[in-house]
Length: 239
Image (cartoon, rainbow, N blue to C red; front, side):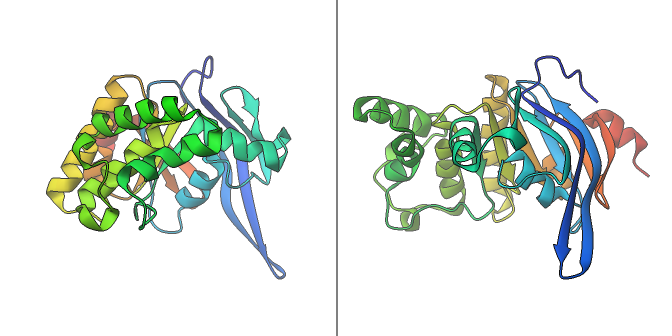
């Protein structure tokens, strides 16, 4: 486990139990880890391993049943839902497998949306949107609708949208899952470049090829964190 001093994310003995009627399903069973600013971390696990539940907690979309989750030093469970939504908007950028772009809005408008919600002034929004699109190589596609863009370009717009509010951490959920290998390589190269510039990125993936772009891999199985190691050590210990 990484040193918790100065961590952007800290989980301590986090559990999550879902109740369906009289049944209780324990999705997480005491997960603890910390992520320091500037890390590029991959969370790996099969379907049903708990990684999706873990992502929901990291994204402040769900709360642990027990245990502690601190985001940039704040105990998330102690924050009211109304303020939690604001914390989510300010501190976390999301990149989804399905892009989740507004189909009738241009790339520019899609990227601008988090800044509108945050109340950023029009002039500042304009500069930051163009900067974010330039970061992902799409400054010349600002006025294109999602239907006029390839899948890889749509995901790059989604990355720009995640970055435009300058969050503390970017959560990428299977970011290459819907892409061909060439587009996937482009997206992963962008995430790596952003990480080298200081962005903290956590990728959830089932793909070993995607995970190898991270410097650290967390493996989740049956609701437990079963490995937390640098990529090379994970490879060395693999059967």
